[in-house]
Length: 172
Image (cartoon, rainbow, N blue to C red):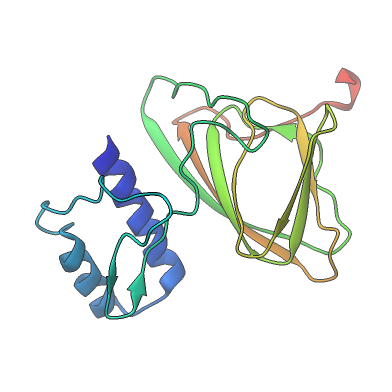
């Protein structure tokens, strides 16, 4: 399982790096993904995993709990389904109250974003910061900055199940 997670993290990194396909092939060869011999399970969370030819891979988040301290739930049964979204929130805009029934995490690429739960807990993110999102907790995000906030969010869900549920106004 650790190897799968590490490989997924490296694939995610390649999405952000934006280098050429030949550079991708070189990186994959370097970490052994093409031959299946690569392993970085021994790397500590605060140290670079790979540093070669100016490629620097760092763990942004490695946790068993969400940003509010809640323990992450077990993965649901069924066929796993990964969803990756790029969400752009204009300045001053709030997302509707919603919750995620699946584990998800994100990285704020640009701007600022404040996340609030319905119990009043608050997290303020700045560009470059990562978040392990709350699961099954009503929350919303608001761009309190003056430029659009861009966040990439990765959802580890199950095929056929929703990744986000918006709160019905009548529930409140």
